[in-house]
Image 1 (cartoon, rainbow, N blue to C red):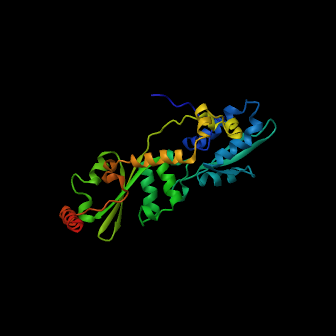
Image 2: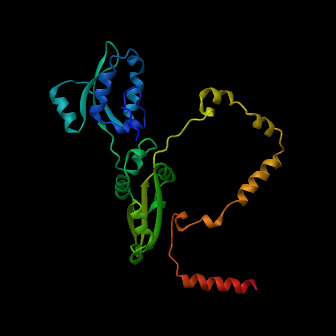
Image 3: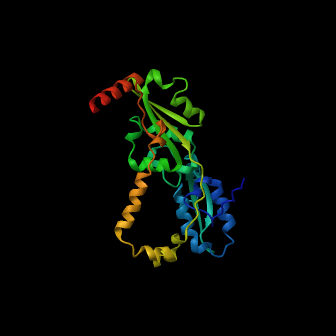
Amino acid sequence: MKEKKAITLKTLTKSNVWDIQENDVFRMWTAAEKDVDLKDYARKYLDIIRSAFEVEEVKIDKPEIIKKYEARGLKVGTIRMDENTKQKIAIKKKPISRVTDLTYENIRHITATKLIEVLERNFGGGWDSLPQSIQDIIQSGFDISTTTLPKDRMHMPGGLYEKKVNDGYEVLEIPKGLWIEAIFAKEKPHVEVLKSRMSSLDDLTRGGDLDDDDDENMDLPLDDFKHDEDEDDDSFDDDKLTEESYRTTYETDPEDLISEAEDISDDEY
């Protein structure tokens, strides 16, 4: 298994900053003080740290003032902004306690258990009560599925609930009268994304280089492209749909389905 490289001030991003703690900030800053270019990027590093930490400048450096910061859970330390300027700051990791605290940068730095705690603490209307923007953030880091069933059927042996739990999903149950909505959450595996040449700044400004095939396609009529899209649509396989393809699942008596099928058959003939 590939070991993670130690995070330094130069490699700090708005994503991996969530992996460090208050003491790490001061340790990394001290280690970077010897870098000649620290003064040129000090503000940038501080902005990145602010994205995950509460940062306050300590303007009155007295023991009684320092104790007040520490009583609030902040760590106090000194950082060098340039050769001649030092600044005392108090920092504290921002909590992730509300759904509005979730971001694309921090969503992969919490566990499924933590996510369920946040959801349970902040809402009771079910998955669909969350704003779409929050749903998108959560689903960028977790596999989410839901089901709504009568209370006495939610925990039936061999049912979806049992299968999901056995597959490593955390569950939040939300009572809805005589029914229960279950929200299943499981962390998505980290996938290393490779940058294509079109993602480089040079290609973006120039519009990218066209391959030979691209040049030929430029002369094709629009209908040829439409034809390809139609073929893709026809290739959809209905057999691939499963119960878990739907976010919300409702239980139906098999006898009702048979009765409905017979009615449809009678109508056709």
